[in-house]
Length: 243
Length: 243
Image 1: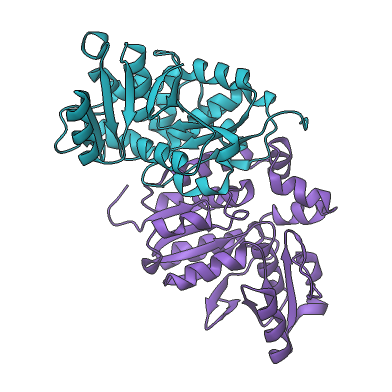
Image 2: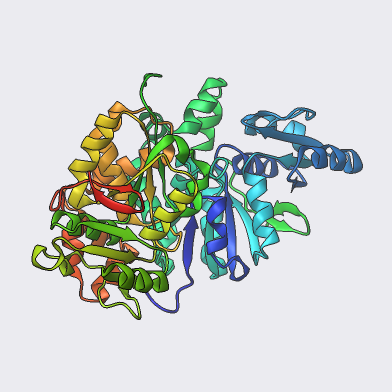
C-alpha cells in the first residue's frame, strides 16, 4: 500500500453508508439485480438520460411533465401506477432511443438519493453489464472510491458484493484498501467468478430465488454477465447520462 | 428447507441489528478479537460472572461497588482509568477464579447492550474458544437464532463473519436460512477454515494489522482457535454466567 494511492471502501448496505466520507469520493451505486444493470442498458441503447426518483408518485408526476417513460419496481415487481418495470429487456434500442427514463426502485435509486443527500463528490452507477467502463473510469479519475451496495431493504446481498469484488479484483491494486468488506468481497468474487449464476444458485442467494420465482432467469443471467452494455452512467444535474 | 426448522440470520454490523426480530430469537454476540473470546476464557477459568457495561465510568463505579475486576479497552488498548485489558491471557485461573469481571469494550459489550435494549429473547456470547458450546446450545434450544457480529465501530469485519460462518458450517442444516449474509459467511469460512490466521493475514484483515501492531499475535492465534475455553456464557439478570 502506498500513501499516494487513493482509498477504496465498500459499504455492504445503505445503512452503513454514513460510516464513510462520500464528500471526498466517487460513489459507485451498485444494484446488480436489477436497477443499475437496467440503467446501463437503457443508456447503452440510446436513452437520452435516466432520472432516478425515490417515490412512485414523483415518478408518475415527473413522467407526465417531461413526457418520459415511467418505470420502476417495488419488491421486484412493476410498481402500481407505472407502466414499465425494472427489467433490462424492457429497454431495447427501438423503444428507448432518444427518450428519457424516469426510474424508481426498491433499493438502487434510494441509495443514490442517500449518497446525493450526503454530498457525494461524484456518483456513477455500476453493474456487470458495464463493469469495464466503471473500472476504467475509476482508474483514470484517480479519486477516492466508495463502492456502495444497494442491498435489499438494507440487508446485505450476494450479487452486489460480487460486483464490488469484481471491481476490486480488476483494479484494487491501484488503491489503498483498509476495509474488510472490500477484502471479503474480493475473496467471494474470486471464488465465484467462473460461474456467477451457478454460485448464486448453489449458495441460495435470496434474490436468485425471488427473481426465479417471477420467471426471470434470463434477467439474472444477463445481469451477471460482464460488459453487455458497457457505458458509464454518471449523475449530472439530476440525471444519469453517459460520460 | 423445512418450515418446521427455526430460522437463522446473521447481522454483520450492529448498525444492521434493527433489521432482525431479536425478541423472538437467541442472539449470539460475536466479538472474536477479543471481547467474547475473553469472556469465554474468564468464565472457563472459574470467574463467577462477567458483567458487561457500556462505559468506562460505569465500569469503574460498579467495580468499586462489588469489588470486581474492572477491565476493558477502547480502540484495542486498555481504557484509561482501568487496570486490566481485553486480552484472554490476562485472566488465568489463579487470577480470575471466584471473581467477578466488569468489562467494557469498543464493540462487543456495546452490541450486547443494544440487543438487550431491543428486547432479545436470550443472549449468549460466541467466539472460537467456545465454538462447540455455542453450536450445541443452539442445536438443543431449537429456537430462532441471530448471529450478531460486533464488527469494528459498525464496520463489517472479517473475524466475526468467520465465526458466524463456522457456526453455520457446523449446524446450519438444522435451520431455515434465507439470509445472504449467512451464506456469504459460510462460504468465506469454508475457504478459510484450514488456516484462519493465515487467511486473516493474507486478506489484510484490519483487526489483524491493528493487533499485530500492538504485538498481540499470540492473542490473535488463541482467539482463532476452536474450543480452548469451551463454556457457554449466557446473560441472566445483568450478568454473563456459565450455563
